Length: 110
Image 1 (tube, rainbow, N blue to C red):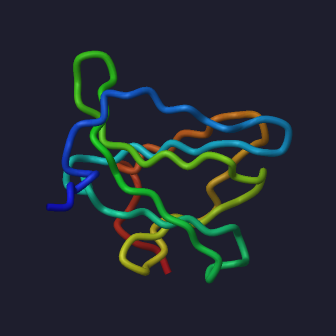
Image 2: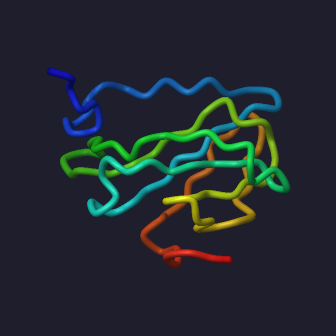
Image 3: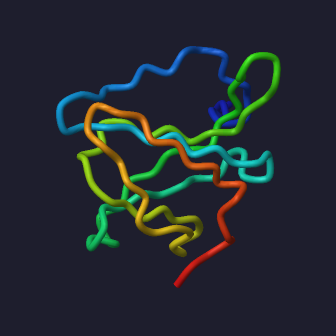
């Protein structure tokens, strides 16, 4: 049997590889996206995508559903679900962690 990695809670710490011109992005979602893939692409390169699963983690004593992208070169990004751009212009700075509350973002943009 193959374990569904996204199905279980993830209590382990997240280690981010950031610094100089590399940053990170944490996307907070609601439970409905648990196990879904979120894709990310640099601005102007929609075809150049990578992805992360939305995993259940803990913030204090509550569940949080997040996708964590690290090693992102400083710049502007587009986030995708199901092949559709969900938000454009997400800024990531080198040596920093950007955060996006996905629960406040419209379902899709063109």
